[in-house]
Image 1 (cartoon, rainbow, N blue to C red):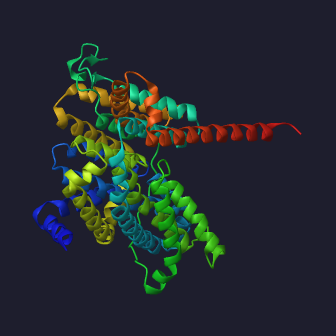
Image 2 (cartoon, helix red, strand yellow):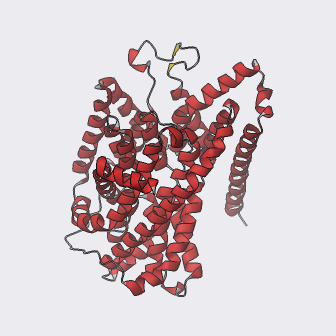
Image 3 (cartoon, rainbow, N blue to C red):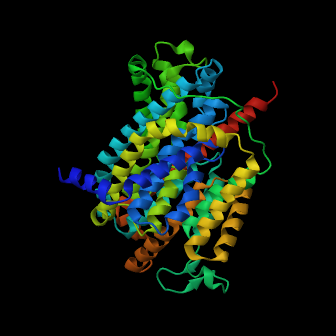
Length: 498
């Protein structure tokens, strides 16, 4: 009862509801623009949260994430171009329904399934996060150092197709994190005489440059796909249809929860896996690929569940499970909020506000999704140069408002160029971002461990939690190496002449 009263107080006494609605609207719009993923949409608004109250800022970012996962299905259904990676599976049957004149029905099923997935993921988030975070109470400096290395190894091994590139990206991120004041000795490092670098390169700048600016550079030479002049009205499923969708939605929710708990899983994997399982368990598998309503419901429920479930390892241990969760981690760090048990003890109002704001955004998703559809259709038809100019304006103005520094703008633009080259050569972004975020945690706790042991590395073997994390990291790296070796052997076998 006390918790319920606190939630009601937050709704009335704080700008939580406006933040949730604004974030939801921006998320849907950003997700509806092809190529502007959920992480890009979140990174664009991240600089503007710098001066906000911590609870409002986190609610805003979480609501953007929720909205973007639904928004990505709009162009997937209407123009066969997924707005986000996780909406790729929706294209298969969603666009077929549109070709059959059932676009409104497909959009309604996507919206309803997204709401179901978001609610399920929120229940899992509330039920699992705090109990898991209590495990971190037993952590020592060695444990935190090993946990950071585990997070980097998992993301590096699961990002892209090359372990070497993933590790290289993580190493570059950790190198960037060493710029500025030494956390132990207080000596400035790698500043090259620039006073602007004394505070280091903030994770927010790395996220905006890699996710947003690099994507704008990549899309600068591509052409947009016009939707054409047409009017589409969302038609929500009736009771009979809702009953039919229960099974694929349940499959999507379970798959989304499992993938959300696994760092590096992500919404796209959950969406395709749930699509396959929904077809396997369907009474009408022959309809899949030909405009199946179940083929739309399952992946949409899955990727919306991931939006909440991926926050469980983030809030519990500080390991984001996706690019979007990494941006939310940046939002937490901006306001001095460290994930783990202390977050629930010292900033319980922020966590409660996150839960309440996410619920508001999820419930409001139906009404907002219907109302904002004409705006999304209009935006999809805008010339790409105009959209790119608007997004550049958001990026530069947002970064400038943080410190009023032109030097920061130069860092972001240079980072965007680096991100463009990374994408061109197949280097993943997430390990680099995590390297910047987790680098200080790994370094400071490693050096504290060395101070405690007098430089003896065997202190890590005396901590069973650290040993468990390090063994798990080695297993992930070994599994990734074996997978790459297996794929290389398979490719050589395929090209070998008979």
